[in-house]
Image (cartoon, rainbow, N blue to C red; front, top):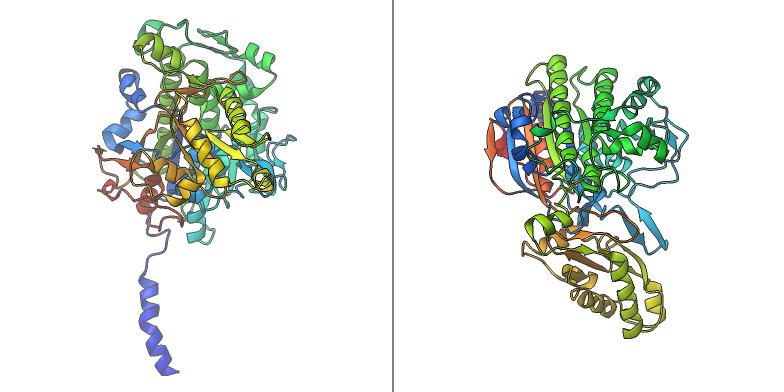
Length: 540
């Protein structure tokens, strides 16, 4: 017995002297800000009008990575945010797009739909959702796991996909805006009961104050020198009609019958910021030595990119107001925790491309729209001629084609041949630069930078039978929907806080490097599934 104690004693002393997870972190409050549709060049273009205590504070005190690539074939809200928050590509995390086709169940799958759960915070069905399709842990999941669930993680967004997929599986609260009620809500997947503080916030009806305002320019019109004229003829505007200031939000709200209109104005970001501050106070983030993580997703530039475009006064005004939101949040954190006693990161995702009409008219670039409905109709005709008549295509969405594999088997046709024939056919479209069949993707080890996005974005069980890519600056638009301008792969990371170096890093990084870098900064291992590399140069 004495011999056993002697053997164990050195080990026990070692354990006692190892600092705990919480004690080993200089920043126990971590705030990650994700900005949807923000282009890197907005910082440069709008610099003269930015506040000293907003984005400029990151540039003058923090660490900037301005050359980050989102190297995956499909970029949409669900797949991109998941890549950032897990440190893995869709081939691993499984969220290949907003929707995909489940062959075994013969149904279209939405990334976060889950009928087993109910809405918490309203009577709508928007809370019937979860992260059960997510195959790996997020940064928040890792923090919870390492701390034996003592640490707390939260996410706030205007949209449920980003709220859920940024949170992960075991968040203490994922909140998003319900378009019908105008309340922030959640899912019973995360919360058994809606917190009293969140109920009281909704009861204030700040959203009704914002929705009754007129959206007018923050600055005199002459100051918007980095934007085209307010009434630029190629701007779509709200309802394809209202493309110049001021915008009567109350009227638009009444006509639409939904609070969704707020998500396309700066007041949507403001509402998210209001809720975030309330959460920090009410949940007492930082009250003990546990690590607290809060994800804040600002999304209003997504709709701005569709309605007005990146050259509009509305986009510049939205960004300047977002700069104010950032400054206000930093000031709030300074007052609550003291300067340098917290960690803040910023990452953008799905930067909007410049509009096709603008590129045609102003820059004379030979770019056009790609009509997926028309392309699918042509493909169906070709397949009926090449093989036999049949309803071969189950789903064509997000630059992916899903076949009816049961029908192909019944007709005793080769799935590989079917996929390869389709990929070859699609390559002849003017709009399409590359197309790959699933069989080729399964057998090929890509090393070329041009082809790596296909490898990173392909999940054998969830991706389409054929995946294709549009030529640069081409945009998706069919007769049933507004244009989609996702496609710019250039992102940026910003870090600010205790122990962070002041440096503008020109090196090339991947979108998967964000989560390992945050893990490194708070001294925990990266989540399982993460393939990114920590940017270790961040620390002083």
